Length: 410
Length: 131
Image 1 (tube, rainbow over the protein chains, first blue to last red):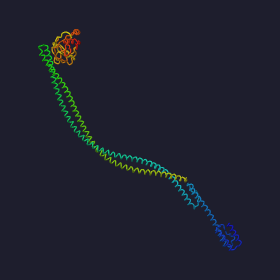
Image 2 (tube, rainbow over the protein chains, first blue to last red; image 1 turned 90 degrees about the horizontal axis):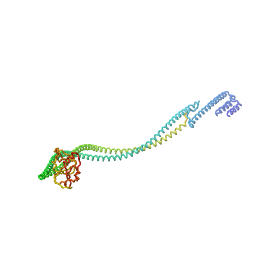
Image 3 (tube, rainbow over the protein chains, first blue to last red; image 1 turned 60 degrees about the vertical axis):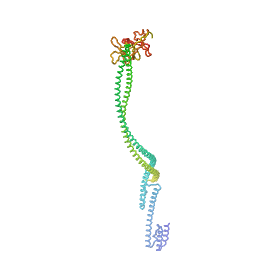
Image 4 (cartoon, helix red, strand yellow; image 1 turned 180 degrees about the horizontal axis):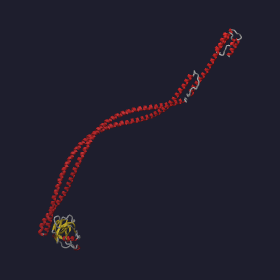
């Protein structure tokens, strides 16, 4: 429309060729150009003044040049706008679709946009690398958090078991403490009994020594008795021999009296006195025989008693010897017992002292176990919290992984 | 018992737990086995003497012989009763010469010669009388 107006202005002017008119027409065209009507031109045929004609020509050249420049500028502006729009599209794909693969896709960008697009491509490359690293990291975090969760759960379970075991151990140590106390008391009692036993053993040793002395005297007496009994047995044997002689004499006397009586009887009345004497002799001989028989019986009894006494004395001597040996053995045993009891006494004292120390140590252990139990409970609580944290971490890792998966890098 | 009883001096002796009598005139002496060399007869119709230390010695044609006895209780003078006729017949060769009463017991009077002769023949049977 502005061109039409310019042309109408030039046609009006051409009705009058004067310098003033030429100036006016040039001025009109310049004003139109100044107002942005780059199509306005001075109609050189309407310009009569040569000087103005040259100016008008120059003005037309300036206008033509400016018009070309404007066209170029507008083309560049379009190109820039297209590049920017494509860059914005790429950014939008990153934001809305997580598309990080490739570049902005602009093949021949405007030189003015080249730094921007290069930076954008660099940004995509960097984001892609970050995304890949984040994906890898999220996977590692997920795996690690799972391991941490498993470890924390196991630790929590272990700590629970430890706490239970420690509790039981503490209870056992409490019982052990009581047992140690009882053992200490028993050891003290044992030491006291061992002391008494030592005294009794020493008393027994003295008694056995006295017994051995008595047994020795018994042995000597048994020997004396045995000798006396042996002598008595010999005397009795001698008496027996004498009695045998007496008995034999009495028997001969009896026989002689019988024959005398027999002869007296054969002699009839003349032998009556002889027969009476013979009968008296025979009666005496029979009395002697009865007496010797009685003596023989007594000698037999004495012999049996003597033999029994000798046998008894031999047995007594043997028993005394046995008693002496047994006493010696008992003495040896008692001496060993005394030594053993002495050792027992010493050991009991050591045990008593050791058990007292053990009781003190056990009490300290019980105290320590109680503290350990508290620490274990706290560790168990910490393990439980670690489990919860690990579970939360695992969930976050899963969430991060899902977020990272939204970015396409291939 | 019947018939008259003649008094005689008898020697009382014991064999195998039984008492007997014999005429003192028939016995030469009382011997002792351990010191006399006379032959002793231990087993006769009266029985076997136990630990016979005594012997009633008689004279025989071939020498002396002794009846072993367990004990000799002495000499007594008592009536000797003859055997009843039937008993005497039954006893054949008369080993028992009569009977006596002593200490309220009836004892046979032994004929030592007949007894020892019978023992020598090997005939042990003899009647001990009413004991």
